[in-house]
Image (cartoon, helix red, strand yellow):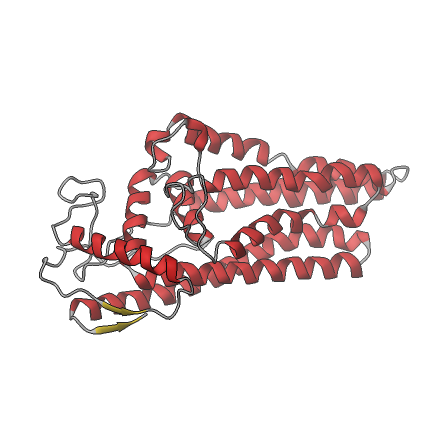
Length: 340
């Protein structure tokens, strides 16, 4: 998972007399989204000229902090201990246990055929989701006032990431349930690709703004949607990293105020779309070109290898884009004409 570096120390926001940026955007392809976000840019910069306090404070209308050049800050510190433990938990139950069951039983219990071995091994693949999904659902439903989206709503409205996670698990379960019973081994090996493919489709579709009749995390119904990486970033940090609603407010302000940050989110969405296509393509090549004994371990291990490598690439892209955004805001503070 990509994370942004801790921004520079906070200081007082610029005065109301600070010149507004002149933006020439070439990164956003949708004129409709540009008009909507241009209005938000003017509104949020005006708000930030009124003075700020720390996140959750009372001196600013949104309770936010700005840097000295006026950029709304994102207060986030990555603490690797829990994410690493969670990653190892997923590796253990979705790679180590299935491989041990499959290969040890194949070696020492000769009477078991491949259909039975695949069925036994696949039973372990869903165990981790039986723990983390209910826990995340409980946090959102029970403590919606702390972690939930900014919109008022019922407890079951949840957020974008929770709905995606729920539906992707159902999609992922299809080959795990059907393939062992029918002996469709290639179908089983495509289970990880079927887990990634819904995300791939959503990422690609979200590159265009849509007026959906239901909310998207903290975005009201029928407002132009943002690239999907924005909602993932909002939801994961707010719920899984327990930064709560202050993070959702800060991210919303940053997105509305910074054309460069919007372009960064768009590029991250394109990046993960391409990464998803690569994963599905490699999976298909391995499944159709390798024997089952090799493909079983490779396909499961490839998923975690892909997460690590693609995550590192996303992290590097984020660092580069954040430095670019910092320079943009410095130019904005000096009243220069800006190119996004």
